[in-house]
Image (spheres, rainbow, N blue to C red):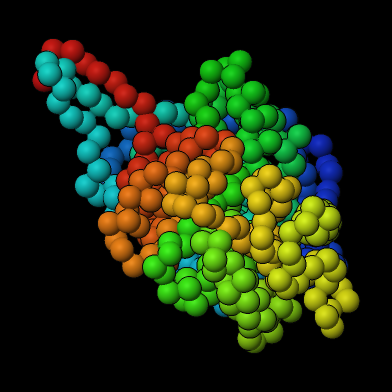
Length: 474
């Protein structure tokens, strides 16, 4: 049992202003694995004041000082790497291999990338008769999710510190363990007091206080579209900048000339990675109508190779979803797909055979889905794939764009001119062609209700900067 009862504020581990605790549930066992304190607006106020006081000096540090600091953070992170990976498996059910090789790896990846970009980043430039300076925006509030917990913490904290901002972080209360260890990393690395602050809590108590606090100049939020809208509303009275990485219902268009076996299998395995709990998951697979039955059979065969079970067991490729709330939501949506007439190619409601505890979901594939069905419209955030037919390329593109979301899109085909043409017509922030994913330098973010702003790489610095023009200083 982990006991994480303190918050990290102004360089110290401190008790919450108002004692209140919450259990953290291991989704594979349904047992309590940790207990955390839940913060309040009073804790956020302490952290915001500490961050504001620290900003005066930290914003004036040199590039070289911040490069050195990020290097120290990377060094300590590497020492705690396995602890972070283990915590992610425990708190949100990612299989050990995924936690080690993907989840924890993104953390050191974003931090080291921010450090390298900082070394040559241009903080000033000429513009006509003026000089334009890029300055840190101020105190940044960060509200991060449970599905890729350390990824989302580091892709925000790394760039913010790189440009000279200070931070108040609220990790997800559902998966807070790796965030707590990250705060320990920051302390051991010698981050100056007040530059990084961490408070555990829920959205209503701590999230609302962060998004509305007058000393916080900017809020970076990752989570659901509904919650992101509330963050923006809370931030509006103080006119603070808000960046949002929100939901998705990403299309995966398979062109007529594609190798169907390879393309469908690739799409299925990508969909089921992280138990379908990725905002950019390729959850709507579009195939030519004549190939629907063949695609469904290939998808079912691919799903049958997914090994669902104990995330710590060797060979497990898919763990549980994160919570009972998520499990119940997914079960309801699977039932809705059945009730609305989609063809169940494999999977379905209930736990996988032989599993009687834990929030495990069957790898599920529906075929002959139309875009008016609930499972095609709503972000399921679980291992559920919808295969949809199209009769022409124009129709495929129309279906792909017929969604309030616009985070990612996928195109697979042999004719690269056609692939690129289709990719250019999908209204989404990230397009992946023929299985090629972006890297840590690729800007990540969405169109429409998938959010605004971009994270990762050099583009991830932009939202933490203000622009100052000094006329006559060219």
